[in-house]
Image (tube, rainbow, N blue to C red):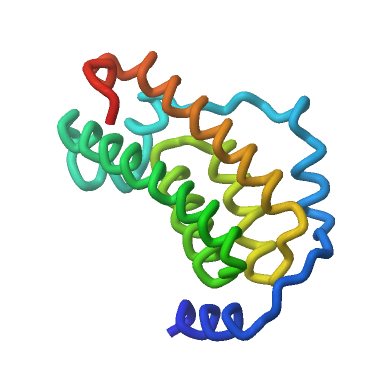
Length: 157
């Protein structure tokens, strides 16, 4: 019910080019952002995963799913911004935020959270910059997965 009301409110808003202070702070902090990348410890400590099972297979499945879906979500971010579709931009940013946090890609999750908040408010002035930073954070997270989870090095997902 809540997501339906957000979607209705968001879709009825016009896009604004006025940046939020959160977006401005987020876009100006590139040099000081910690390089919080994914690691197997983050996955192993995830309460949702450890409650479900302690099997390495489930962790690999979560990583595979995230790698495939996160790339699609980034394309959705780009396409929805180009089409001025704030509702899809908001939904894709929200999904990317949550799924990235689930695998420990916290820098990526925080950037997606900023974009999500801006999209919910109809503000897109910083969206192009945020999406570029999201792409970079995604590449960093994928590289970290490939370094720290040897099973992920066999082929691109």
